[in-house]
Every structure is written in structure tokens, then in C-alpha cells.
Length: 151
Image 1 (cartoon, rainbow, N blue to C red):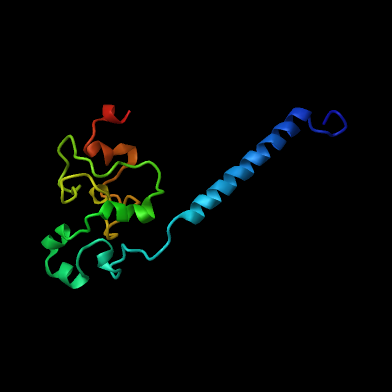
Image 2: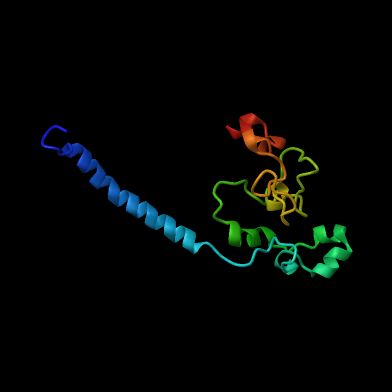
């Protein structure tokens, strides 16, 4: 190196200025991860069904059709207690503007809910994040939206 093996001042100055920013970003990320709610995985088949449903496992198993309607009124809020930090996602509680395919079930009140796009009981994780459809290249989103809406 020229200058007796010393690095140019601009390089040292940039590295010194960047270090506090990196440390601050790491500290914020650590706090965010630590602040996430922790608890039992309620999506397991042996979990307490009353976390999301209004009745117990025996009653839900006895009548599968009724089980779909036996959901807690604040289900979306309950989902967000553990999953509220997942980043950008579709808003829930909104009525679809277009028809929604039958394999993407709406909430009991006809609005889009977490279960519209995600399996709730871990039935299948072929596409990751328990998505009901493949979302590579926007496949899941394009089931209900036109490409122009998403740009």
C-alpha cells in the first residue's frame, strides 16, 4: 500500500461512521426478536382447541361442519398475538371485491382472514408458511387479484 501501509482516511472514516449504525441496527433487531410473544404452538393437533375455537376438541371432532363456524369472534386478533410481526401481509377483516376460489375459505362473516391463505392446523406446508397455494411469482395473490392491482 502506498503511504507506509496505511489505509486512506476516507476508508477508515466510512468504516468508523458505519460501525455505530450497524451496532444500533443489531440492537434494534435483538429487541424486536426478544419482544415477540412466545408460547405453545397452538397449531399442533394436540393443542388446546379453545385457543381459537369456542368449544373443545371432542365437540369439534363430532361435527366438522360446525367446527368451521365455532371460531372465536376475535380470531384474527388471536392470530396476531403470535404472528403480528410477520411483515407485510394482506389485511384481514375486509370483504373481497371479486370472487374468491373455494379452496381459499373466507371467515364466517364473509371477510378475508388469516385462514383464507394459510392452513391453521399445519395440514400441508408444501409451499412454506402453511400457504394454501403456491405464491412463487405471486400465484396465491393472483388467485384473487389482477396483476395491475398489485403493482
